[in-house]
Length: 283
Image 1 (cartoon, one colour):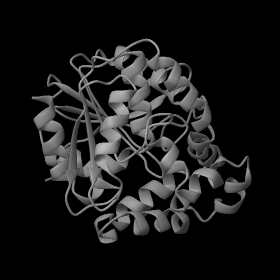
Image 2 (tube, rainbow, N blue to C red):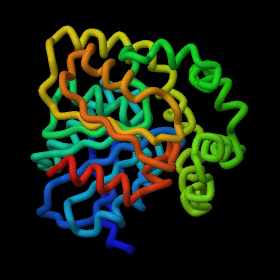
Image 3 (tube, one colour):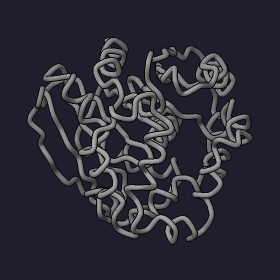
């Protein structure tokens, strides 16, 4: 089902953010944050599955896609601050914040620093939060190190974004065909600018600092924001270890769910299932 998309640019800290909105403007807001290598377009299927149930907003992260202003670097805490300014600017109350991949890392920083009515984190590990060290030690996560090298990934990927991104879509999804050619083209276009490529790789370059920031935030005490952690069952990893990591970091009662038949890109592989889980959580 197609839905009407309302595109706007919201000026935030001198860096206008591209926001795409669907659904009921007076409904309960759900704000979606994408990861890498994605753009707001990764949430289109979820927003279509939701119909007019809620006020749905997806944003291009700073420096990526149609958010063409300067990016503040990859610090998830700084990016969470920009998201918070967006939330205040748009008057979003009773907010459910949903983040996938690096967007989930930003959502976690937001939870610890600002709080929200509800937070959903999808298909990611949180820097400094178990099983963070195990993930870093996994040789299949080679790209964390490669992307953190200054300048080199830009040099090698520039002009080859589509082919490079396709590798991750194909390897990390259960059925790569569910990530459509239209979606793949949109994501590649979102990183066509040199500054956008750097904004994406900076998400990885900031991970050591993110781990330190999360450790410092945990010292403030437990977080009261309800948290739902989602993971595709084809992605691997023990979801109970992620739940235990959240509890040890001061998020006392995380709720977890495995999404059957999908991998890392759950929102594109099974958008209706993702929306049902998010919608049920908001209720």
